[in-house]
Length: 396
Image (cartoon, rainbow, N blue to C red; front, side, top):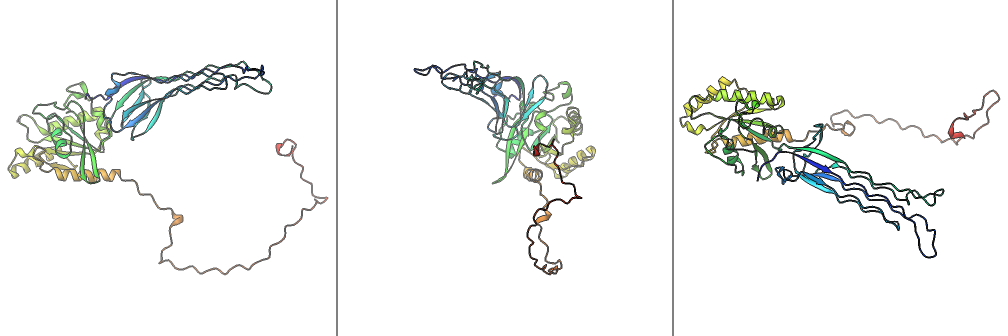
């Protein structure tokens, strides 16, 4: 299935039905009065988040989505039926913008989240609505209100906890295959991955997190080199980035340190917030160095030249060596960030500790006899009686 993460659509809600001007005419009832009903409202256009979808390909070929109009009112006190609504199912993580103003209308971040994209028009009033004691034979009726019409831009940003970042052919697809059930295309040439892939990593029976693999990024991506910055938006919602580095490149002229710095510069050009996300350095393909001394020297040299202060992991995605410590470290990091905040207890319900000194019970107050309510007395001569203000509506 083709991966589509950006598309423009048009939505049109239904128009409201017109009201009816009718009078009751039956045998022996020549003046039965008005009986024209109101029109029905037009159908709404909704957007519904669906976690079973992972692409916007359904909207690539169907650009126009219209809801039905409401029915017109009829005689005999019959109101028109409302138009049928249209529900557009979209992947979770979709951002909905106004195509003209670029204003964000909504973000679908949860499964089953439902929002109104275009509101249907209200139905018009029939002459039954205008009947009153002074207007016993109204002939007024109103048409239905038009529904909203909008041009929308849909942008998909996948929801993942961990994002894989690195040069082409650094082993990102091999790593996501080793730690999850995702099966992306793997080959021995660069730019094998042409669209993002998601994989669910199972740590335990109820312990898991989602990893996103995006196409490789090369130097000059801001100018359109390679696939450019086309898929970097899918890493903006991740909690941590794994920067994969080919520690043992086949070409001796390729410097892993220079590649790491080039990707860091491209991240900073694209989005500073993405550049400031936590990044872990993952040195891959270390199975090419069977000598432990040589491997340790290579890792130490790369870390020293980069002046890397964050976490560093050594592994081989092909042989799955060192993958388990990485997976458990990622789960611990993500679970801490996803844990709900601990609310401070309310001081009003905190019980006194047993070590606090007991408070002496106060002597009970003597019981007094309740006084009978005093009768209202007339004001004395020297006291002016209260006269309410005539402007106060409470005393009119």
